[in-house]
Length: 375
Image 1 (cartoon, rainbow, N blue to C red):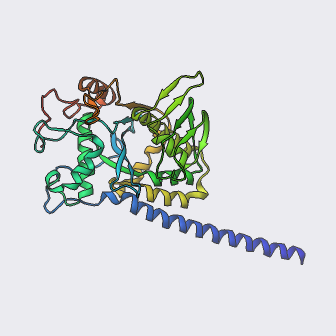
Image 2 (tube, rainbow, N blue to C red):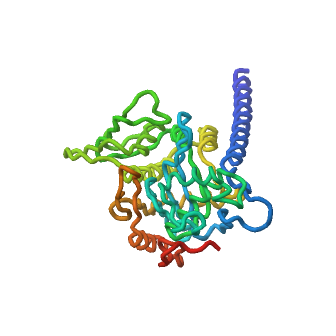
Image 3 (cartoon, rainbow, N blue to C red):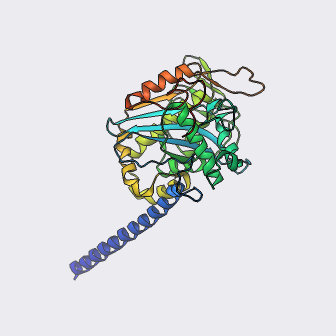
């Protein structure tokens, strides 16, 4: 009779586990569908009537084998601000055949990026900082994107086209990342391991996940950061890094861009090494609140296949920064605009992308005095 009781208890336990597993799977599948709906929402059509492809909307279908280029935008949408700021402008380029990836960061103060034509500015250059282009274009959609109906999409597409001309490549898709949600995603993954050569300190640091006080200090060495501290690691552009030998290095937007690339690589390592399966519902929720892309939802399987390639760490990281690729402003007190060094950018981008075919665009692919006319 005692044995019979244990057998019944075991059967009940197995039934409960089976039901629980199915319920958990149901939750995951439901959230996965919701996540796909939100993440791939950017892929909805944005063109007005007619069959002609809009000027600013790429017409591209990835076959899973060609090099693919994403524009990754980090958006700071802190409720205290009146507009969302493009804090991070980074191109992620992956070659699925060669198993290589390239990360190219463009500092947000970079000026004079090329535009598709001379329709708006006579010299075909945007005369302000690159991080303001999305806002300017979206606020005057009829001027910048007369063949599009969505103002937000107009802003992103305009920046996408300009960055492509700057690098001499076609930017096939974009992905936006909300910085607040990015911190939540890191927390859902159990943190991320980051390293510093010294003590990073910024007495003025504030942020969307750092409202409890002003200022932050991150210690030297490698440690696991939660979302708030990892976001600070990637956002600090003032303050100092004090090395063990006493050397003090002032921080700037260029060093911040390099740390942002390090965070992306470290996050990939965390995804590859973590036992995060049981936290999958929370992770999916965080992704849904964090990422939006125009990549076609029906091709998401091919997109997922890129992850192992990136995790192989065969990644080239470049920041188009001073002194190699830009000159400092001539009138910094009037408008802090970094001036691109066209020859240096041309040489670097030929090294990064030239082996795949002819480069396109004004800065790299053409020696013309003005941007190439739009088709």
